[in-house]
Image 1 (tube, rainbow, N blue to C red):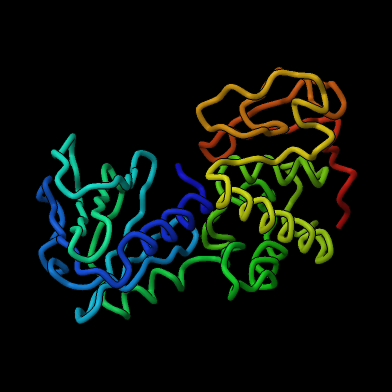
Image 2 (cartoon, one colour):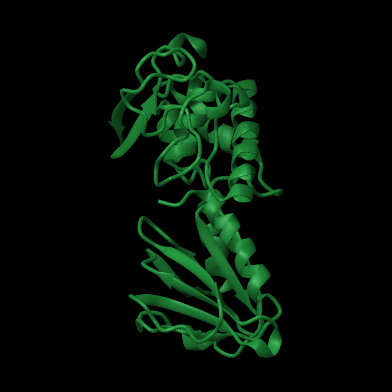
Length: 278
C-alpha cells in the first residue's frame, strides 16, 4: 500500500498539473460519478495521511480517493490517450489552458464524492500526519502512551498516526533502537518526539525523491562498498524486506514475523527491549 509520502507527492503533482484549469472528468469504467465535476475548474489537491482530496470550484463536494493496496494515479502529458485497463477516473486538461495533460486513476479502494461535513468526518478519524504543517505530535503521543499495544502496531494505526506504512514503521523503529514489541505506554515523550521528527524528515525526503530512503550516509552503498538495493520499492533501507540478511550496523541477521496481518522486520541486536523504559 502506498505510504503517506506518495499521496503528498501525488497531491502536489495534481495541483501543479490541473489547478486553475477547467477539466474534463470522466469514468471510463463507469463506477464513479465523474460527470458531477466535469467542466469545472480544479482548485487543488491535498493529502491527509493516505487519503487524497481533490477540490473543484463551484460544486459542493470534493473527490475523495484512497488508493488501497492496488490503486495508482498516473499523470502523463497529452489529452488524447486511449483508455488502457480499468480506469475509474480520468482527468484531462486541454492545450487551451496550458500544456495538455491526463491523469488516470486505476484500482483504488475508494473514489467518491463527499460533501464538506463528510470530508471533515474522514479527517476527524485520522491521527496527525507528520507531513502536514498543522499536525500535532502530542495528539498522537497521547493515544500511543495510553495503550498497551505494541509500538509497531500503533504506528500503523491510522487513527493514532496517519500516513505511516510498513516501511517507515520498520525503519524508524530501527533508527531509534526500539524493540517493535515495546508497549506504547513505555514510550516516553522525549522518545516519541524523536520518532516524530525523524518520520517527518524521512517522509519529506520521500516526497522529494519519490522513494523511501532511510539509511544514514555512513551506511550508503558507496560508503560501505556494497551493491545498491535491488527492490521494486526502491531506496536504501536497514531492515525492511531484509529478513535473514546481515544488519548494516551490527551484522546480525534481520528478523521477521507477522504482526496484525502485516510483515514486521527488525534487528534483535540493535533493537533490544531494554533500550526503552517505562
